[in-house]
Image 1 (cartoon, rainbow, N blue to C red):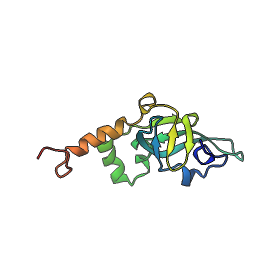
Image 2: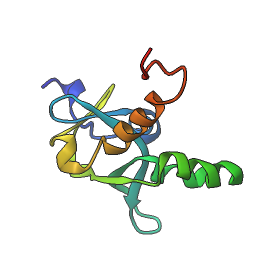
Image 3: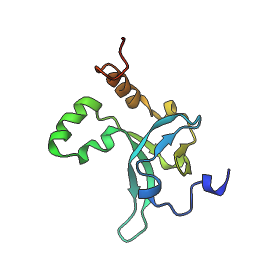
Length: 126
């Protein structure tokens, strides 16, 4: 593993982690980092404790109308992935475990199945 493929000593969370695709140990895409869980005392450095993946991590930041509508469409599922599961911060966020072991990828698959049923999506029968 090269230096570029490890968790760096300093991580710009906004540029290097948020909104990056998460890959499990088998390099299967299993979500996007939607938010972070951090902890720390006032005046002390913050420490990342988990990645938050899923619509439950971002729907509350939407305008009121969308905040009421979107959860009905995409749900409120949010998976907390412990930071200790992250082994690589790079172009993608790579994890030490399989997606299924962490509960990842299920909401994306369900949403994909719903979208495939919409007219014009290409997921229906001809």
